[in-house]
Amino acid sequence: MEKKRRAVRLLLAAVLILGLFPPVPASAATLYFTAVNNSVAPLTSDTMPFWSGGTLYVPYSIFDASLNKIGVGLGLYTSYNRDSRTVTLFNLRQMLIFDLNSGTCRDDVTGTTYISRAIMRGGRPYLALSTVCSHFDLEYSYNQLPDVPQGYLVRIKNRDTAMSDADFIDAAKNVISNRLREYTQSLNPAESTNPDSNPSNSSGPGENTQVGKDDTAAYLAFRCETAAGLADILDVLGEDKRCAVFFLTPQLLEEGDLVRRILGGGHSVGILADGEEALPLLERGGQALERAACARTTLAYAPGQQESLEERGWVCWKESVLLRPGDTAAPNTYASDAVRKLGKQGQPVCLTLEGGENAARVLPALLRYLGRENYIVSIPMETML
Image (cartoon, rainbow, N blue to C red; front, top):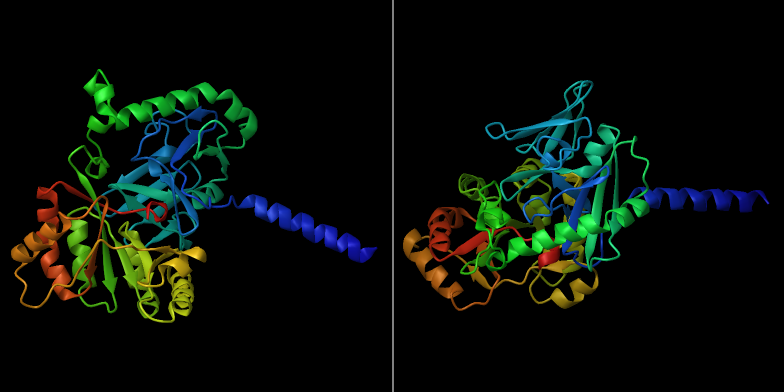
């Protein structure tokens, strides 16, 4: 009898623990709505939550009533310092500071430092939702919307909110429908009679990621077997406000400072496993990444082994063009030739550069030429590939 009781207790504990961590959807969720307490925020592509490494990220502005466009607060205030690259959240009792450079956050009252990073996406800082909610005694939930195919609602709430998620979703049907219609119209400017009301025409931090009629999305990746030239590559991307995917070997992933700088700059990290034994390399790289930055990834660079790895849940990079700049390559000539090769590809374009000092040398010219030819360099989410 005692064994049965112990088994029941263990089962209930497991159910409770699983309920605390909403699962990442197995397939790509096309739309993420956000609600604060009982209000649904506008749905825009440059403020939409996303998953990265098993963690849900939301724009820092959603926590501040003066910034989230619905005027509903959670008792928090936020600020973003572009010079120091820090995001601060605070109330009368607590203060939490996210440092984009180091990939950490700090409790400014106790001095405790946590390995929980902010991510730059489209020029806007996003924060790990679980970290903020845990620190400031908030709650959040993640539910699929019954009336929106591949639509999900991320709801952030304080403990004064009594309405259940199910009741709220049912009560907010019309609002969600209106938000969806506004979002759809913003993606099709020709259907809007008033250009000034179209969110895609407004300026803002995320405007350089909007892909127009004549634009082509270009996803940029670096294949890095060594750290040579990496610092220079990161400097160039930072100055140009562009993000990329860095595929690193398991050995490089063990260099914590390097990995945290990449992630803190808003870039993504994948695992380079270019060889016959890809799976052991991916497992080793995943463990190294978790130790270095408490992050996870499903992105893999493993040519020739994509089908078998994707069956195991990995997202494999499928490059359109692989560029290997040489020592004698003149930056402008090389960039012009590279863009000419891309002109024969469909969209979106997945462009891979062999990492190193030569890649850093030609990168500024390449970014300029991509811009001239209406390529919008942006970072892909794992569900886009």
